[in-house]
Image (cartoon, rainbow, N blue to C red; front, side, top):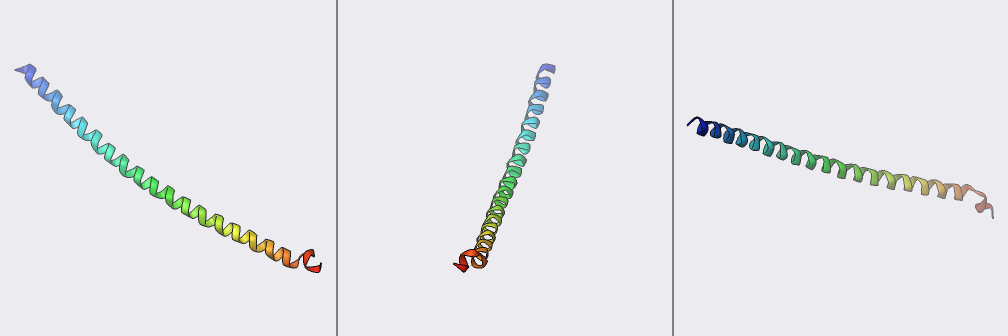
Length: 73
């Protein structure tokens, strides 16, 4: 009888541990989802920044060409 009670306690402890692991895994999945969304947002922001930087550089180059020695030719 005592052995059965001991086994029952072990089974209950394992079930509790399994539930905790499942909860932690679910929290990890949620956190990874949030991190992935943040990475996507950062990538979009970097793309926009690079486009603006490129546009700015092209504009400056066009201005330089418009004011530069080529205009005098």
